[in-house]
Length: 417
Image (cartoon, rainbow, N blue to C red; front, side, top):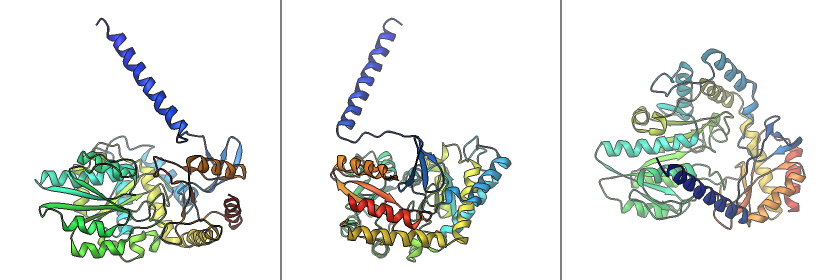
């Protein structure tokens, strides 16, 4: 049709200008993100542009990405089941490898059932969608009560199902079906629960170990509050699983509070060393996800090899508890040394392997990361909008595979900052 090409050209040109302007603004504010090619040498060392660096920025807390049992399980599953699933779990994508891994994950997290998803991000979306979808199908209402520092995937999921406006860190106007409470502010949460409509399902959503600050949810307080004002507790254990609890079953399990949690979200890409996510909950909830969790229903199933890797990793957690002890001992030591050097950490576990070194300004965080790289240490800056403005930081993460001398070198280099 006459004019069609010109209109498309105008639209494309307008989009291109908008993209350029947005990226220039990000760059000006020292917030522009860029990828780099990183070749893993082993669990804690990488090669970037031909230079070997000790990595202190991955979530490979127990080094399982390079564990022989995990690698062999993946290789065996590829030979047996092929490279991919080729369909969603509800078509032909649910293989014996998936069923076996889900049963192992459920036993590990002490739940009736588990479902595998391609990522932790999708697992959070599917869980929230299932709650909203089942409530709507039953003719009921649901309200999500979200910790302000909860992961972006939880923020995005709740925003999508409620139509609310939530910023990258939970800021914004409350939607029709959610409220945000200040980080670990159980007094505010108690007021919200007390004032809830009697016909409305209340769902509290939080993390066990928070990804950016390395601190912990007040699970004991949440369990006590749940006895006063019943609610459904969705707990993202992405950074607690593997590091805490018997056989790495998680922070809630370590404190004897797993029974207070209704839905666990687990990522397989952190302490378990592979990729993907899982929802661990009751059999009924997992059935709800399979019916109302769009991120599960409409996604191709996780490759069987990743399911096999997850099951193998759970076995390693059970058989090699020294890995968990090692990373927590390193974290205690590094935190104590850095505290003596003047760094301050948020209140929380003294053995969390996530160490946020808050420098404030984006340029300061970037400059510090560059100085560490010059010293052969890979630590990346975290800047807004990932964290609130004024809290740019270095996010140091430790692994059981770091050597003592490498941690000492890191502490000394940070002390010089």
